[in-house]
Length: 276
Image (tube, rainbow, N blue to C red; front, side):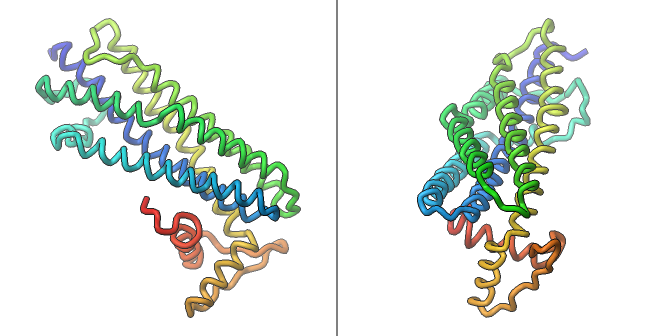
């Protein structure tokens, strides 16, 4: 029979393992918000609105860079043995028979707290404000061909933000303890299950949908496609052939041209020299 101390430690290990995919998903979410901002900017005609949105895009890029740097630093600070434990496949067994010393237990608990602190109230407010601003601008657009798709994008933006907020609030409310007694073992395991198999999974699905919707809109936006074609001409490349469908230009998402478009967006239009 495995002692309660070892089972207690396993709970914190499981909690720590959920923090890592959560942070990666936060980073992906914020990155896609930048692409949505870029798309929204290209829909604008008013110079003041463009300047406002460009400022928010720069702010969000800075926050992504800061978040990822802190995330890397946090991982690098942890010992190789702890990272090895995190990465091990335990086959979802309830009793993990890895024996670790008190120093490792202390570090695991400390890492959990530091991961929680990566998502600050200021960052939440920035994401909320940008999400609200994007939705306000998109709702004010009257692009006939994109009306329905823009409405779907607005719904998806809300789904992703509230999924982010709910998941973050849930994680922050998890009791913090270096050890858990036998009375709350089952409840803590249930919490881990909710994070991993419900909240994280459902949010990831919403994020994937957001990613699909924004890149579908980008790849059919005439202004963006013309900019891309001009970039190719300026660099001595043969401009992509844009197929017309329902009076709209488009690039097939499984084509080489689409891969080139995404690379151009990332390196030339959206992030530039910023290393993410």
